[in-house]
Length: 539
Image 1 (cartoon, rainbow, N blue to C red):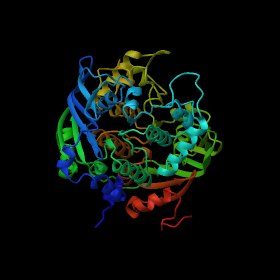
Image 2 (cartoon, helix red, strand yellow):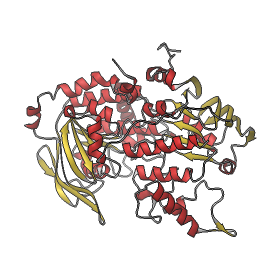
Image 3 (cartoon, rainbow, N blue to C red):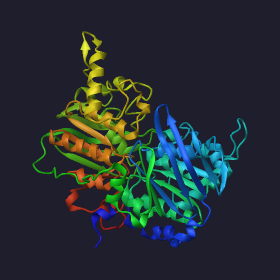
Image 4 (cartoon, rainbow, N blue to C red):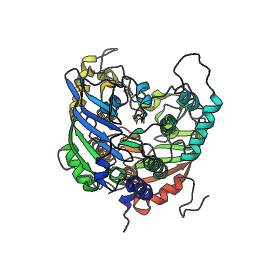
């Protein structure tokens, strides 16, 4: 019998595409006798005294999906960046189709038919998708490019793989999910034989994950090799042929996906069993309304009205989950209620008093905290040390008279780093040097230095490993129990269903449904997200 948890991470819809991925590789001996498309031997990379990769071996064969797992900081991204030429290994060899090669740059990687969709996108933000992709044609300056030809080819790829994205607007005006789709189009455009997907489903709803896995199924059926990195173990087990687990930069085990299970993979990654269940937190009733929106409207970066008249109340001591396909106004809602985006219509009330969205200070002063989706550029200042980032969204920092008391600031930041187990060399380290999980824990610590009136969390566990994700979720529940109202935006259905007291679904900038998690299903929420009715019929 199908369980809701089977659909949570988008696994069941992929069964057909997984047959495509696996059917070509049923004979294990036959695969092992083939020459790998990509083979790494003894790859080692250090940054100062820190060893990120320690004598790693990895093989990717034609027609297989090879998953690479590990906690944040285990060395996955470093290894992928070495394959793609972003880093040079200190030692070890890389072979393509049995021949040793030297990959000194992404240009070399592309020449060797290696493509990569990075977790942090490699896009020129002021250029459109068409112009970003056209840069792959020729890296010489002032060389005319046949933009029409590039556009036609991109549009064919869009139609072939059902990738709906605005390819004319500057990338900086697109949401994170849309930017990822541009990266996928770039990868397809290069015609790579080895394709690296770094957390590709982190921003996608189940319906779009289905399309992505169909793409991967088609690629492997044609003999291409895929390296797949994800923290969603259900989809790793569904899509992968083999799995390599990294811990602290070393391979702890390589195994067949058919021999693996979720609990065993967790033990390999973290060295212990982890309780994946969120304790029941829905007892009791919510308190007074802390923040309200009435007829709220706002434009996105492209000046398009993507928030179209939203009415919403958020109570103290409740978690309101927002579900929606990227680009349907949920980010604009979060940013407007956080005071970082100006409303173009409607009203916002805090404790029943109307406030101007043109005054960010008002929101900070009223203890509205914001954990943005982009933790690297919006949630922090990458070139600033941690103790200076600690001051962000702090209306009343420690002072000595009129001067900020940086000694006290450093003490507060150090205490938070220890309390939230942020792995860092100290408060003087730049946030750019932190892994995604550690940076997110630091931002959460900053947001919860005192119990806020409203905590707005936008995709708070995106790209985080299991341990870090569970830690963040526990802190959200603790904030709720302390009387904080929480607005939670997430693309992880497991997260939405386990944390939310109410689920709000947005489509084309409007609220199209509200459900209690215990009274609905992933399928119903998914249909509402795509503009369909709960019974599956189009509106």
